[in-house]
Image 1: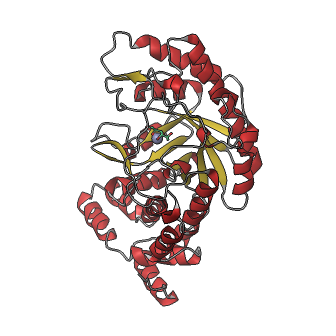
Image 2 (image 1 turned 180 degrees about the horizontal axis):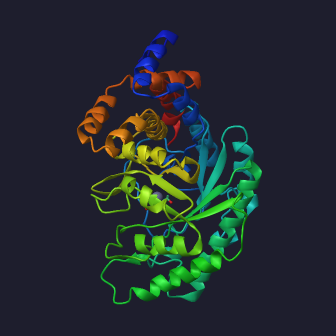
Image 3 (image 1 turned 90 degrees about the vertical axis):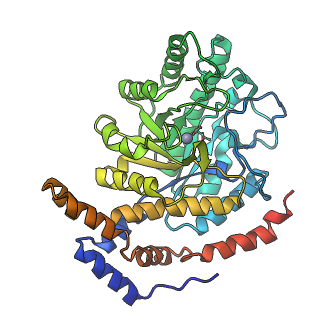
Amino acid sequence: MKSELITEQQYQNAQEQYANFGVDTNLALKNLASIPISIHCWQGDDVAGFENRNDTNVDSSIQTTGDYPGRARNIEELRKDFELALKLIPGKHRLNLHASYLENNGKAVARNEIDIKHFAGWADWGKGKIAGIDFNPTFFGHPKAIDGFTLSHPNKAIRQFWIEHGIACRKIAAAFGKEFGTTTVNNFWVPDGFKDIPVDRYSPRARLADSLDTIFKEEYSQDLCLDSVESKLFGVGLESFTVGSHEFYMGYAMSRGKMLCLDSGHFHPTEMISEKISALMQFLPELLLHVSRPVRWDSDHVIILNDELIEIACEIIRSGKIKNIHIGLDFFDASINRIAAWVIGTRNMIKALLYALLEPNQLLIEKENSFDYTSRLALKEESKTMPFNVIWNYYCQQAEAPVGIEWLNTVKTYEKEILSKRD
Ligand code: RNT
Ligand code: ZN
């Protein structure tokens, strides 16, 4: 499949059409290039990680579905796959790592004993390829999470184990921050909850707050490590009660000066995170987004360019606080080519941001403020059929990334030559 390159003339024609609506396309492209997306490592290997543990008695709070061939089986393969994805995505981006992606010459390390040295390989590999690394402690897929509780576990020793994991992860995050000269976002998500209706909701929440307070006791410079906390509505097998609910973490983040993480799959089906950004940014200095696509539940489908993705991007841009809103991706689909999943999802996130940057914002606000909702609707609809495709393709071309559908050829060749040979 081939896509045509954009000529300067085509770009200028499109530029004029946007200028008629008061939009400067050159400025939009310049701004777009400065927005890094935190691309999650876990799309490449179905959230398996490389801990080399052989215990089977683990919780299943994170689930991927699908059995598409070619999953990365080790760090080298994951890095190669990720490098290919990066080449097919315009702009400079970040890698989002989970603690379970450590490197220790094939030997298992207890999660409360992980150290900077287990991640030195990632830092070396990342130099020059990525803008920085973000991090996540891994509180799932482990025998000590089997009861459905980690940081809020009723047993003090188990809580302590996970507290030590959290502390170790902050140290690693800060080291990455130092290495790359950009803050590492360190995101805390715990699966903790009950399958059936509990009688004590208060104590687990008190224990979670207390454990987090212990983890966050040490101060790190915000230039090195920024901690965030991520809520959830429910998990499979933990349907009735989630300790770290939205209210819990909203209160926690605001009272402790932490960052809040909103995952698009972690709310009721009609509740949209795009709507929450402007409310939270009144009170929180920073926000982390996990952009994902829930289909009927928190299914983590690859993000498509749908209304909600565009609204999320528009709300980020309209807020004027892009520097304080960190955009992370959190989808994992094992039923399609995993590199293609990265490329489709990340390109869509960037496309949505471009769409937002090309929105005739000034004009729309004027109409809204003068109660001219007819013009607001007419203009919004008109902007949907502007020559967006020309600007997007031009951006890819300038960034030396494939234009249009060209990237798919590269992925298909790689699949044939490399992925299909993995068992
Ligand atoms: C789980 C959360 C969490 C994870 C990653 C792997 O529901 O969304 O962010 O997806 O940490
Ligand atoms: Zn998430």
